[in-house]
Image: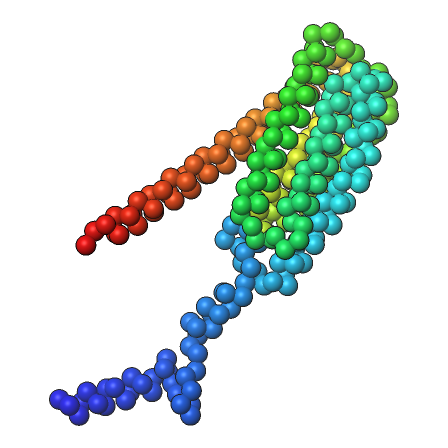
Amino acid sequence: MPGYDEERIKLTDFSPENSYNGGTVHPTKGDKEDENLNELVEIGSGVFVSPKEAEWWRKAIIYVSIATIIPLSMLSVAFLVISIYAGSAAALSLAFDMMLDASSSAVVIWRYFGDSVSSPEKERRTVILFAFLFIIFGLIILTKGILALVVHVTVTGLLILTLLSAVGAVVATILVTIKFIIARKMNSQTMYCDGFSSLMGAITGYSVIISTLSYRLAGLWCLDAVVAILVAVIMAGWGVWLLLSNVHICKSKKDLTKEKERDKEKETISP
């Protein structure tokens, strides 16, 4: 029926989804959501925030990284001196943990310096750099720990080592908490890696306290070297896992790109 079709067209034109006001189409709710989504910035995997909030988180990460580098660099030098003076393999591992944490924070500053909050390629490069740092520092600590076991190195200067280890452990624990909160909020692998680096420092700090007290009270000289070896194995293993997982992701992306190119060639060839 022609009359019925005309009425249906009129009702459709003036429905709430397509309402007119003086010839102007009002944007629907879906259109507004799309516009708002286009204004958002991806700060992590599947995490979108406003540009202002993204800038706030970027600056917060840089400030936390600077706050990590300054005290931990000082502590790493102190532990390095103590490890040479006291012959402690765990103190050396803690010194390298602090160096690693300061280095990883420097890498984080490079990652978030400038307008690069949303940069998957820079994120991937940062994680690969973290992997190499974990492997290198882990192998150095592992070598020192094994040598301490073979040579039967005993620890001296227990009081200052215990006190500094307590300070380092508390500082690292605070940094771990802050970094993991940021990592969870942003869903950033870079911040998770940086938090893991601080976590290793905290664990090593508490382990050094336990090992020095055990040596003083029970004469367990080997616990110091064992702690260093365990930390080194975990650190290097984490680095290898990061490296292999990112290489696998890169390979998967390349395979997917090649597959899309083949599909385009087939579409071009087919009539």
